[in-house]
Amino acid sequence: MIRLGKALSAWGTPDFQEFLKTEIEQLGAAQLPLQQGLSTGSHAVDSKLSAMIISVTEDANVIHAKAGIFFTGIIAGCSCADDPTPVDENTEYCVVQLDIDKTTAETTVSLLNE
Image (tube, rainbow, N blue to C red):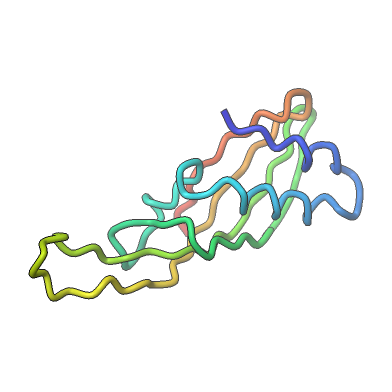
């Protein structure tokens, strides 16, 4: 379960977006739907992960944040000893929706098709 406690604690302050951005960047490829968001690569990696907050709204119980994620994808070869294919890194981008529960900080993340 993802919990964005620092971002929730900063809700309603000018620092909220910075705390949210930092916590998203610390999640990494294992907790974000980066693999599903690939457009040119075949494998998402954690290096060079950067988040950009696009919009934030709320309702009575949940903070809804839309974020753009810049990350690195690679086109993996067959990993054979004689494979001549170099591992090229590609900059990838996807948009995610984060829904943060205002009571528990439990957060669901879903990929948006934009």
